Length: 86
Image 1 (cartoon, helix red, strand yellow):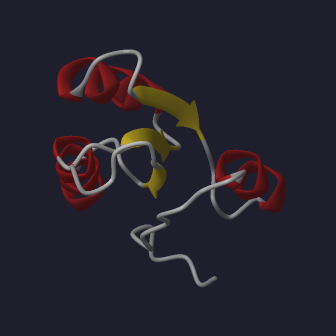
Image 2 (tube, rainbow, N blue to C red; image 1 turned 120 degrees about the horizontal axis):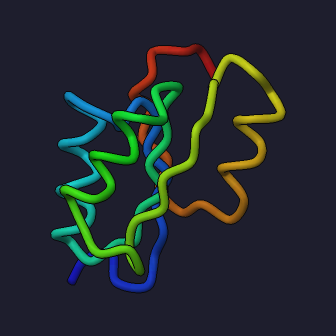
């Protein structure tokens, strides 16, 4: 497993490309923190893509510095999906 023992944060991951990235990272052994502004859809996605001990759903607005700082912590993989400039 390529990313076993690593944790990835994926923004905009309630659906679409972000969700696909989360699914792929899970398949490659990573734990994932999925984040989005749409908490209802995010919760559904978390339940659909993985086990509770490997997927954490966090409502995040990446345009708000405090939200973005909160979810990154000790992240190893941080794909840019949200389209928000870093």
